[in-house]
Length: 317
Picture 1 (cartoon, helix red, strand yellow):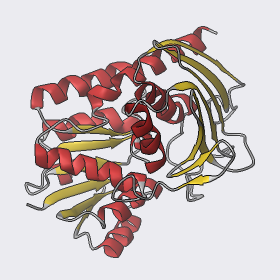
Picture 2 (picture 1 turned 180 degrees about the horizontal axis):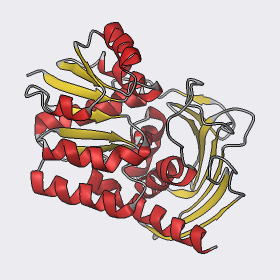
Picture 3 (picture 1 turned 90 degrees about the vertical axis):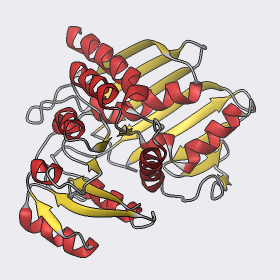
């Protein structure tokens, strides 16, 4: 059976999904949704997608569509996820699930009612680098003492990863911190019991904090220090240092190094070296097998509960 997919959001991240899906057998993207019809058509032509629209509802009305991948602005994620589930479609929504906790809880509740696959794009669970560390932990060969994480971008104007103007404003807490908050609890195998945050000045036009520092503690005693900035004029991205009882690992997206910066071969960890492709493979496998996926909306909800708590702290401060 070929799984027929609609993809919403033909920007930088949507294209990463389209590139990953090309490598996955028996999956076809049949509909592409994005704001600018001419640009959407250009992308659709490149990837051989026959239906384009600017309205998600048009794609949800297509009977043959089995599943939807949402790569749309953060503020639309929860409402669009619910629309997909209400239309009887499996859904994978890019990170974050929501930027208001109550809306994320509604998605989780609706997923339970429908029994459909609903997954959130917590890519770090799937990168071969982090999978390698996870296998060490599960084998009892490594335990995290501390994670030290830097999430750095240079984003003083509202541009996306391709250097194009954004129609929405990104967020250090609800988007970028979500990756690390979820990954820390997932890798520690222990819920977060303590969380603190401070932030720098609010940008006068973007209306968001451009710098943030977060501390986390898991029930098993592991700690995490996360530094985030949109002001960093240097290497961009998120870099993870795992300090453990038997080793130190440094993860840079799909690549992994030891504490002495010697590269570790992770090419045999999974069927691909592309974390986005592996994330999509899990989504489609869960649909075929009728099971809960890794990074289901229910599994990642505790992350958003922590983010909500941190937001309340920051607002009070």
